[in-house]
Length: 304
Image 1 (cartoon, rainbow, N blue to C red):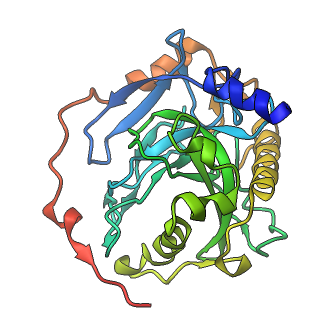
Image 2 (cartoon, helix red, strand yellow; image 1 turned 90 degrees about the vertical axis):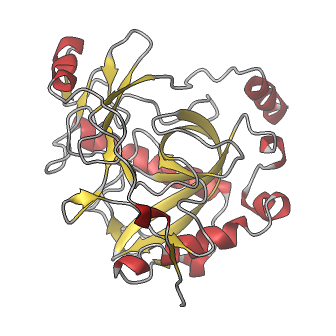
């Protein structure tokens, strides 16, 4: 009965902690000047890292997802950890905007990719499951539904499972979930349902993460648990652990250059709406997108 009530609440849009935001773009897309800032319903700038809640529902099984990279695109967009208010920006490599390679047969990212707010993989703590320390990022999430997101979109995502990737010696958890409004959401309630409804999705996800850095000269990524995805219960436990790590960091001493500036969360670096607006005002005005280099669309062929 509790599950049925929860499903009815989802279907009727009753998610009490569903995050909402409007976006303000700055700089030029496809360059290192580009920024996406977030505003709440009152128009106040907020941090997508620190001010948006982790969970959207009272049962703590549906998360708020900040979409960074839309499916089938290549620009490596991510929430900035060190810049005030943590805007989304494009990662860089050797001073240039970074784009992931198309590792045949995968074009760009094969799901909507993003982060779960108010989580943090602690780089000072050795994870008992992977024997590696955290990667100093909010926890990543792959949303496998049919609708392509846009950068900065906030989705409410049903958690289905998780993979434990090891990226150059660091723990890099990858949550797997589906938009609660997706037509197939009711069919997917745990990790084993994915293969039934979307056969091949988990195998493709494993392969994508293993090979996507190889064309750039990096080694193959590996996984704990022999590459197997863990179930929903396990995933929710990891999310709770990374939430607690974030809370301890954000209310305590912080961590190195990581910005903890917030306007809603009562943490160590809470500022006024006016102070937040001043941060954004210093950024260049939004201009027309820069053209994409034709190399972004080239295929890379990887043999393991």
